[in-house]
Image 1 (cartoon, rainbow, N blue to C red):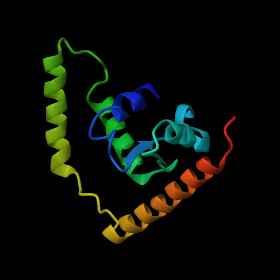
Image 2 (image 1 turned 180 degrees about the vertical axis):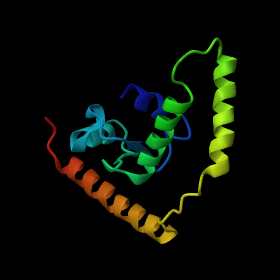
Image 3 (image 1 turned 120 degrees about the vertical axis):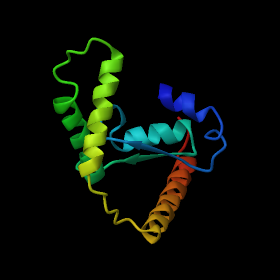
Length: 134
């Protein structure tokens, strides 16, 4: 919540209609309680959990796993410039062979998702306002 407080207290986030917080399923932000806690503190914040086996996330994890194994291990660098040089060389080599990712999400899919989120947010706000204060 410290990071959320830091971000949500500054513009443009403080006055935005909605601010999406994309989170993994880590224990500190897993489930409905975490989403409710964020929404209670910041009504314009919407927590979005990534799927446990998100294909795009898996691709990012694979890339950094390759970087870890092929570039930064063993950690025998004499200075940061050497690390930067090795990372740049790897990036050049990787970019020469990488294939573009074909997204399947259309603008229509995105509009449908945003409409569902609007309905869910409205339902959540109605439930919150109907609950008696304790």
